[in-house]
Length: 226
View (tube, one colour):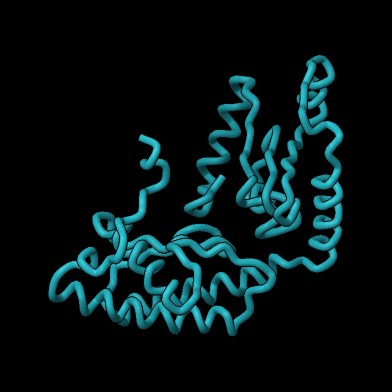
């Protein structure tokens, strides 16, 4: 679906048409986006229905469990297959998921998370503008990604983490909001980010932020494996 950007509805509709025409099973991976905007998958807000969808992470509130849902005709195929599992007898994940789903349906936490996410995004953009830093914030409202200019993105990201750790805040260039994040926490984060962006601007005017890093620049996604 849309981990780093909002879903392009027209694109999804075209993919759905192609899948129908070619009789291809359309699968949405909602392990990151599921339950972060509504009670279910982000696809519920798009009007595009997949044939199968994958859920994880939030569905068990940290406990190890993954769920696969799909249309009956497609899921029926599993009855004709032998699926082995080391964890057949494991029950903790299922109990955690059932309890989490009950709580999410009752509390509807995504409403507060969306509000906090918009507040966080607006705050980051205002601070960046204040200190003349080229910044884009992508992702869905409950998961915000800070994207600096391409050739400096990893350097700035590393510097932000470094400076945040000095005040005992574990931070990166991504904010995964949860129900324990309140306005006071966002305010504390933004106040520190304001100071860091001010430093970045001052350093860049005379040289490079890279020279102020205490450790190597962080790896970009899976490049550490290449």
